[in-house]
Length: 130
Image: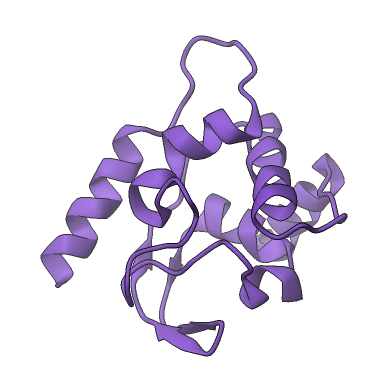
C-alpha cells in the first residue's frame, strides 16, 4: 500500500509543470497534475485518493486545495464521511495554474460559485510562513 502511494506521488511529480509558458485551462492543469491520483472524473481511488467531486472537505474551506497544492498533505482527513490517510506531495505550479485548477475543481466538480484569487494564494503562503 505504501509503495502504491509513493509510486503515485512520484507519477504526480513527474507531470507537474506546464513547461512551455502557454497558459493552460483549469481542465488541462487538472489533467496534467491531478488526474493520475484523483482520476479524470475527480472521483478518486477507493480509500487511497479522495474524491474532488462533491467534496465536503474542499467546499468547507476551498483554501485547503491551495494549501495542499503548495505544501502537500499527510495524515488523516475525512472526505464525505470516508477517512483517508495518504500522502500528497507538494505540486510545482504557478499561481495562475493554481487559480485555474482550483477554480476548475470548484466549478466543474462541485458546482460552486466560489472563486479563488491570487490574494487567497498569498494568504495561504503567509499563514504557513508565520
